[in-house]
Every structure is written in C-alpha cells, then in structure tokens.
Length: 210
Image (tube, rainbow, N blue to C red; front, side, top):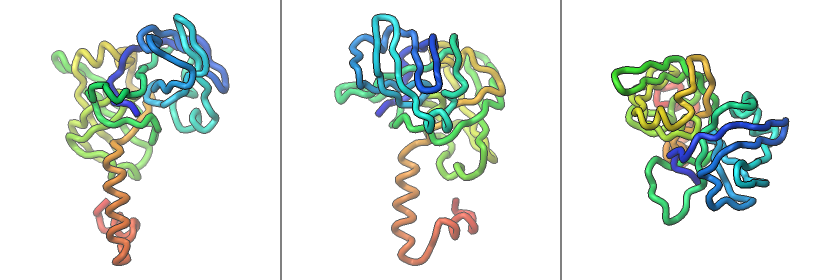
C-alpha cells in the first residue's frame, strides 16, 4: 500500500518488453529484492538493484492497462516505496493498481499554482470521483477541485509540481489513474445491500443514481 506522496523522481535508463530499470537514489536507502515500489502509480516488485538503480519485471497485462508501455530511456517517473506501519499517512490510500489511463487536457499555471484537467475514456468511472475527493494521478495523491462530464480538474501546489514528473508533462500526455478505494467499497456494499430488493447496477445507472 502507498499514500501518493512521491519520494523522488527517477529516470528510465533501460526498458524491454518485460523489464524496467530506473536510476534513482532515495528509494534505494533500505531496498531489498522483493520490495514494492510504485512507479508512476504502478506497484512493481524490485528484482535487482545496486547503488544507483533498481530493476523490476513488468507483465504484459500491466503494460496493457497502464502508461508503462509508453516509457522510454530518459523519461522521468514518480517513485514511492510501500508504506511502513510506522510511517506518516500524508496522502490517501493508494494500492498501486491502476484503474484506467487518463489524458491531460489542460495544464496551466495560475499565479503560483497549477491547474490540471484530466479526461477519462468513458463515463463508466464517473461514480468513483467527486468534488473534494481524492485521486491518484501517476501515483500523486491529489484533491479533485471540480468534475464535469468525463473530466476532473485538480489544483497542484508549487512543491508538488516541482518535485514530481508533472513539471515535465504537457497537454496530450497520458497518465495512470487510480480512484479512491473507499468509493469502490461504498459502491459494492450499496449494491449488495439493495440487491435484496432486486435493485441492480443497471437500474441505478438507468435512473441517474450512478
């Protein structure tokens, strides 16, 4: 489990169809083979490491449903080690399992802050995001400022922008999205409870509840 508080920005130094190697420093402090590290919000397992880099295997399925398939040498990636029991919980619960790929449709600086808009591939995800709710964008814990149609907007503080790969992003880029896990549990429990009265997910969608 992760919190969406990026520890450092690493750099891809080697990529194959099944493996990534990433140059970094901070996340190597106490690393062991088998540890989990989130790479742009994707939970990967460390298979080898030295003083300057670590490598991780990437399955076909993971590449298919995330932006890892687009990464090349020199690309910057957000890195976060798995949460320790004794760690501060600074963001929100992030599992490292990407729900979908979003597209940056707006990236503008407003005074000292930055405004991002992210579009989703379809409305099937709309029940998972709400105004003032949490969302993970490339592994960064952010708060949703507003929602409309299949788009959310988020405001990013200067520190987060400068210390993540957002500073190298541009409109049209694709990002890994993980919705707040609490919304998924609420949805499932609601459906289980009310299915006893023959209310189905399709019924809720058809009548504007989802």
